[in-house]
Length: 95
Image (cartoon, rainbow, N blue to C red; front, side, top):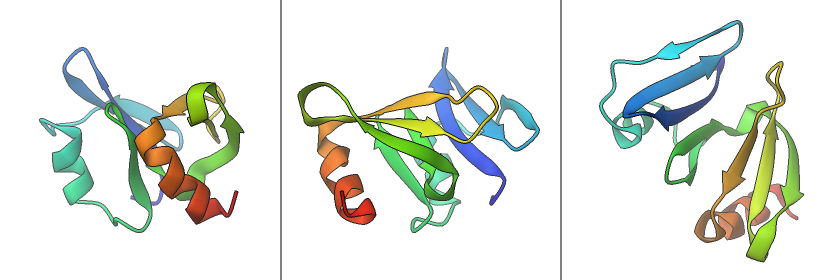
């Protein structure tokens, strides 16, 4: 689980991106995956994204009080944070 960077919903499949590997998981929903991971480390930041807080490289302001995360993968994947989750994330990172 520590190697998992983030998970997202793509075309009805849960795509898990980890260090050195990515692929589809056998989970039916992101909620199901989230239930098997440490809630202190893995946060649902958007309807379609679950991120490992330890794998966030940058937190940037975005539209309408939301945030954009840049992950520590090779592509520097950007993940949107919904306004509803941005407040919790700001408090966690003391922004």
